[in-house]
Length: 590
Ligand code: ARG
Image 1 (cartoon, rainbow, N blue to C red):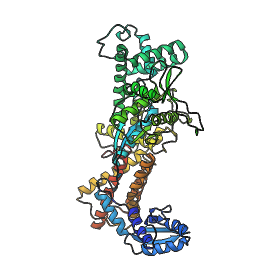
Image 2 (tube, protein in one colour):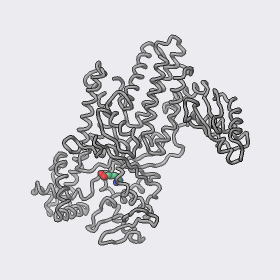
Image 3 (cartoon, rainbow, N blue to C red):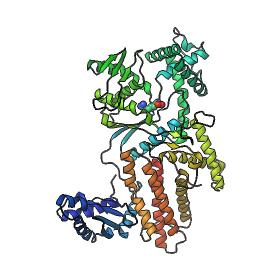
Image 4 (cartoon, protein in one colour):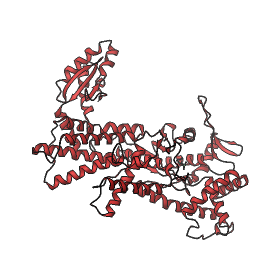
């Protein structure tokens, strides 16, 4: 895969040569997109830095650079602004050439990373026996977008759903099932199997039993002790408990896989907290021997506080006093597992911001234990999804909105909106439903991802599912419009041809197409999908201005027609690519 140079690279090279000719460092020539697109396409601030170093007048240096740049075929015009900014307007020839490169490239002009890394992304994080709900939606949507982006940039990504399947909630649930169905063989300590193959509980049962059990565990101390004991016995391998637990996991997983398929999210690994268990005893022995794990009131802990800490930093509990492994222990054991099987250079955890302390503790412990270094472990927190009242989103009845209910509500709303907008009127019912589902998923994902990851947002399906404004459906519609244009062009025998940039709206579109690398790199470096969402939206807007100013099929000049069609096709490729990287699939028509 060869990496293309974008306009900023080309201009930086030209300006760099001009700086070098003055005996200055060529890196001073770095050009970036202008802060004032009304005045210039690109700007370079190197003259100011050079002047400071040399004690010379920045405008003088800038003028010398501008004089040299005027001769470059890349440059239409250039001047010095303010204290010594170098402004550049790109030539039509450079824009046309860049557009041709983008149009011919299946990656739409996108660069990839020179040194790919092994990356683990831990997201989803749903819990066994709990219905997948809106709270885990963010992790799923953000994590999926990041796995797509990191893979696209060339990294070797392993995604892991890391199911919550091993903590106290498992013991709570075992005891709750025992209360309801005490005669099941799973509770008979002498029975050794075989156990029934069908689950004694459905997902609905689990959804009912879990809150019941956790409420009792909270208020009743005797019950809590029993739950802890059951958890410990499960973890120690009591056959009946293991068999019952397998049913809990399988029943939950069927539901999760259905939701994932519906959202178009894939995981490489369907591991869980329980998979860390085999690594923990060995880890504890090793850390004991090295004096890193300490016995504290019967529990094995690792101290992670530092003198420089400004807030309280409690130790992590590797194994609790009942001998059970909790959230800390399973996360540390998972790091051992990943280190051995994947050896990641970077691990990212896409988990609610409210778990920041947990991850700080675990990462420090990993570092102390000599597992993965702290700097290779990142917690990517996110804000909460709130209701109109600004509090975490609840249904009208005050409950938690289950994910499949959310998706079916979104599907229904999308269908209604399409009807209002007279979209999808001439397709079969099946296809219309399929399109509506794509619109619904686009709405849900885009409204989540277009927010800065760390902020909270207000959930409002009606606003998300609108074909106007900065929404997923608007972007889908923009892409579908170009697809329909392409079909009409084909019908009329019009083919894309050499690109020649003439109009301002064409310039604007190519500059936007060329901005893809900045958007990718920004999203990738900051792990912030909203930057890519912004790019997709700006691209759709630039296309819309272009299409208004430069109609295609009614154009009488065949060369112009072919050039504009080529630009439209290049836009479609890039728009679909950007949407794909945020997890959105485009239908063929609407
Ligand atoms: N199951 C956890 C929860 O619901 C999230 C898991 C996140 N991943 C991790 N490695 N701790 O809070």
